[in-house]
Image 1 (tube, rainbow, N blue to C red):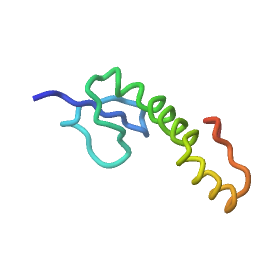
Image 2 (cartoon, one colour):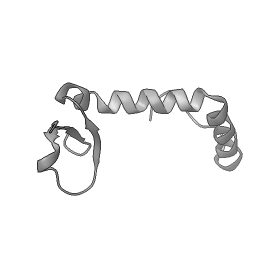
Image 3 (tube, rainbow, N blue to C red):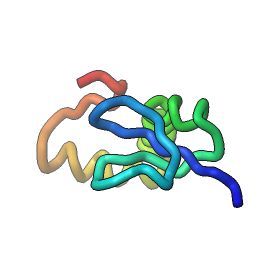
Image 4 (cartoon, one colour):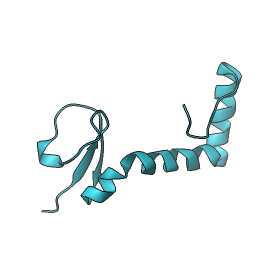
Length: 75
């Protein structure tokens, strides 16, 4: 049975799946290194989706509702 790894958003720690509890996890990942890169991976996927034609439709709807939005990964 292959091990899977998870990234704890709150603490920034990577653990194996059999020891995680509660919410706030990104995963599963096949290696600890992949799990450690989870935040950057998820941001890259989200940015790619926002840049897509489908994402642009939703971004325009959000702009209509909330005004100008930043999509550059900065808070």
